[in-house]
Length: 342
Ligand SMILES: NC(=O)c1ccc[n+]([C@@H]2O[C@H](COP(=O)([O-])OP(=O)(O)OC[C@H]3O[C@@H](n4cnc5c(N)ncnc54)[C@H](OP(=O)(O)O)[C@@H]3O)[C@@H](O)[C@H]2O)c1
Image (tube, rainbow, N blue to C red; front, side, top):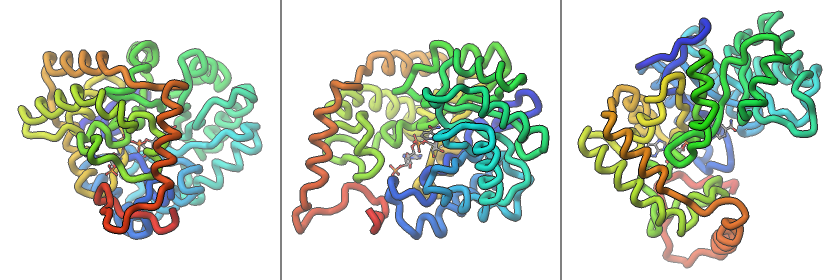
């Protein structure tokens, strides 16, 4: 495993995202929450991963609880990152939520505590003052933000009066916005960008196309999985496949290797199985050439999916189709375990 070291923090280039743990929207079912999730965390730690990311909102606390149980006997091996959902980001609420998260996680210090989203209705100052107090009493080691633009990140630092070590943002071959400002700034100023959805929620695994769309759930709301966009993504997926073949790797591994090739960037892919986790960890040892990197970047530039308002009719059509009763002889579109609660 490769690590990124900044300001006393040492985090693995590949971490584990745990939104999937206990969350109905991913549809992985109770067995995944009961056993696979802990197995994923333990295998990750065995392989040298230390960064594990969760949030109070994932599964309404279930993800933190599952993670807490999984790491109970290996606490010192884990860099635990969680997030406060800033629905009311005033200082007492943020402080109380941190205590609740630490309790679910079974830790006395949260290594990285992040504000999940900027709240446009509230100033940043109270949340950052709470963060500072949480650091002073030792409940939080490092402070981070998530989904903040550069102006908001720097403002958060001013309000904290110290370094906001990380910004967790969507970053992958199909989400390149951080290239413009966040990544260069992190590199120039000893900060870390944590790339979420680094596999574009599985799109970059190359498993999904028009004939094999992902199962319903969280991806029904992701415009990248609309038929039109799945088709437009094929040249990029083909490039991933070809480069993967040259390395004896998979498209997903190449997609992750592209992300973490950027200095000061780490990725936190989620996984639906231990095998996926193992493959994702191995991506840390995959060395792309400059030419391969440039080819992927060019294919990524050329990929222009339908997004925003233009994608709304497609999303509505997909939802209508998903709500139609399935024919009696239909088979599931993937091998994911369906969630009986969905
Ligand atoms: N801060 C935020 O606002 C925010 C937002 C989103 C996510 N996050 C964090 O980032 C983490 C990762 O993001 P994400 O879960 O949205 O997307 P992701 O990591 O891009 O995609 C995860 C999904 O990709 C598939 N996959 C994983 N490894 C694979 C492999 N080796 N080969 C093929 N397919 C593979 C799996 O789905 P299938 O097997 O079902 O296809 C898995 O559930 C989350 O768990 C969460 O911790 C944060």
